[in-house]
Amino acid sequence: MTKQELFENIKRKKSFLCVGLDTDIKKIPEHLLREEDPIFAFNKAIIDATAEYCIAYKPNLAFYESMGVSGWIAFEKTINYITENYPDQFIIADAKRGDIGNTSSMYARTFFEELNIDSVTVAPYMGEDSVTPFLDYKGKWVILLALTSNKGSHDFQLTEDKDGERLFEKVLRKSQEWGNDEQMMYVVGATQGRAFEEIRQIVPNHFLLVPGVGAQGGSLTEVCKYGMNSTCGLIVNSSRAIIYADKTENFAAAAKEEARKVQEEMAEELKAIL
Image 1 (spheres, one colour):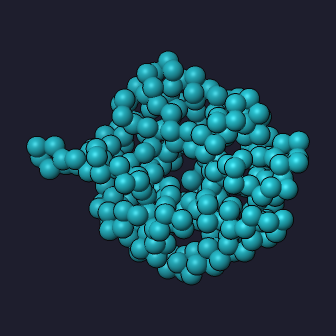
Image 2 (tube, one colour):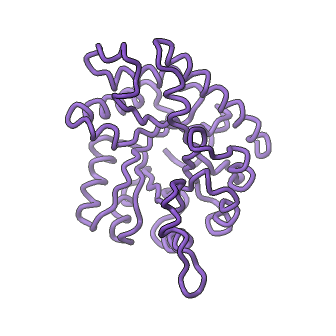
């Protein structure tokens, strides 16, 4: 999916919502445990209920890998279901990979060739040769960790060098030597607030994947005020607040309603650029 295609979907749906499929077997409604594949049954219902209100889905690999082979099967079935039934959805493999070059090449082959996923999250800590193998695939995206929403982000990401440049700023600047805004995005947590203003000074045209709205307490209004650009430039993820809105047999309807509420807020924010 190209950057322009992504923006066209945002304009058409008046939404930049990404639904995070952080599917935990211990949190899904109990009646689904009778299904042959409970994880996929849950995901399928959530996808069918929310697809009209979002432009992306982000399955988090940890929740599937924790189930072993059955989890990987559910993950692959989920990817195939989205691709076949909702081909306009941007799919993000939240895998946070990143290793020495030949290993990263294998990760890239997994997600971009075997699974044909649109994008994958990548950790930049090991530098250029751990990231560039993912950038060799035309039409695919690397989503590089920059400034995350967790408490521990302060341990390294905000540390300064002797010139006062913070580590996340170095990641933003250095990585632009490897790829451009047609193939690379950045993860910036919604809880970072005014930092979006500083980030936009360094990467004005890139899309940002923004977790932390909803259960983690990030403000959509603040994210849009400081982070939105002329092509929206934001993919805002919400996971738990949507997919676990209800634990009864009405879980899908509840997820749909929560997604609709977020989409309505986003439609208001998009009026500034559309």
